[in-house]
Image (cartoon, rainbow, N blue to C red; front, side, top):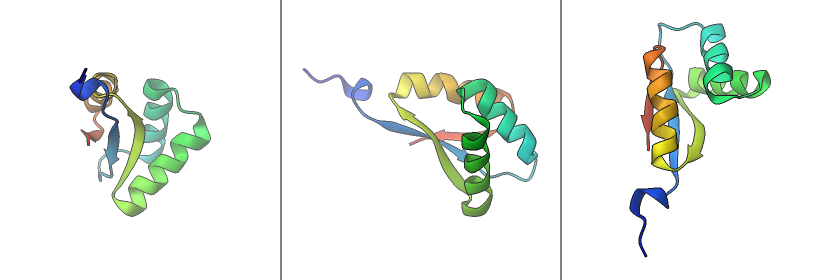
Length: 80
């Protein structure tokens, strides 16, 4: 039985932007994704220096829920 997008592992990607502060990005990741402060800071740093960073992996529906919340708060997000 093929479950399609349920069985596939996707990545929720955060892109660097020139709008949001480090602290805002970190606080948002902690609040929305339940990251711990160190984890959130690492993601913010990687996104800043490399242009993007994977925030979470999992199935599409769950990541879309996180992605929608993060987008509403002003972060630049894609699911790959």
